[in-house]
Image 1 (tube, helix red, strand yellow):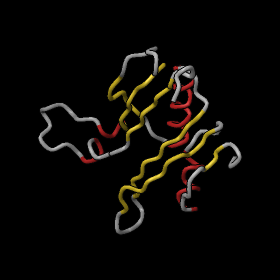
Image 2 (cartoon, rainbow, N blue to C red):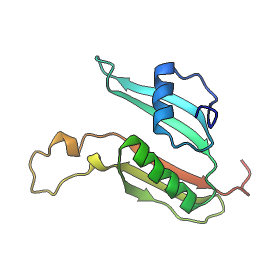
Image 3 (tube, rainbow, N blue to C red):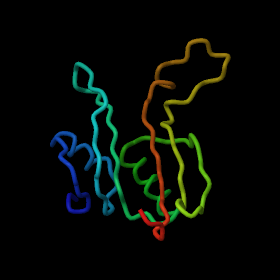
Length: 132
């Protein structure tokens, strides 16, 4: 399992185990990891991870997203989209967690479960012919 996911940076062992559990088992390189916030109980940690994987088209990227949702027990809705098949980008989409959806305006005080999840997922499939 660990030979499919390579860490190019230092990640604490506790977080590394969590990432190995969450990420789909496809060849992946973790190139950035940043802990944004840790609460006093050390239970709720928010972090940012930038990974690279071998997704070369929209279908492969969406299959990776589906696999990620199954492994992490989360669901993501489309937050914003971008033009497809441009000289730089084949596919790009930003998703937000299902539990960050605003209820109708009729609800005066929405339950925190429905508005409090900070999770976002950005998928960017770059054109392989593009120079860096």
